[in-house]
Image 1: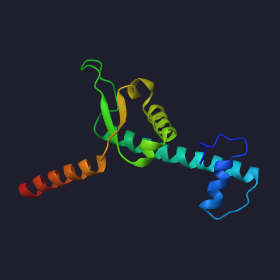
Image 2: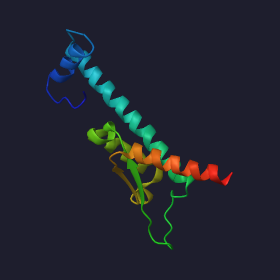
Image 3: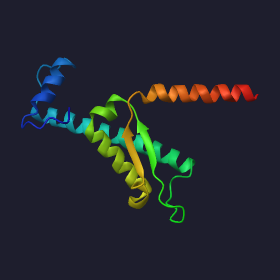
Image 4: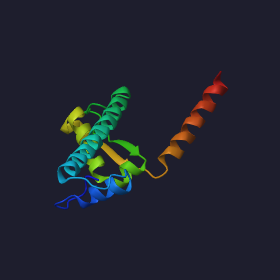
Length: 135
């Protein structure tokens, strides 16, 4: 909704009407809704970025080891929000950069992965079956 760039926020007004059943909304109300959507999207992306950084820290990929060369960390993201919402991707990358610093974040690549959920589930199932065999 906050991609609405029209002067009177027609798209936001149409969504308020069609989805939420609010037939008449003022310009100021539409502006508030658009800004609220931006805030929620940014917060969600920042939380996701914090999760990515937490995992990178846990596996020891939160620093640059000059002696070993610069290793890249590739983070695969799946989902419609990441795939279709460029501003979410930008907010997420900004959060990772803010938390890790510019130098370290340059070695972190966040990329869209089709069917990442299915691949992740398969990897989890495989690792769990190995765990059960060892017991």
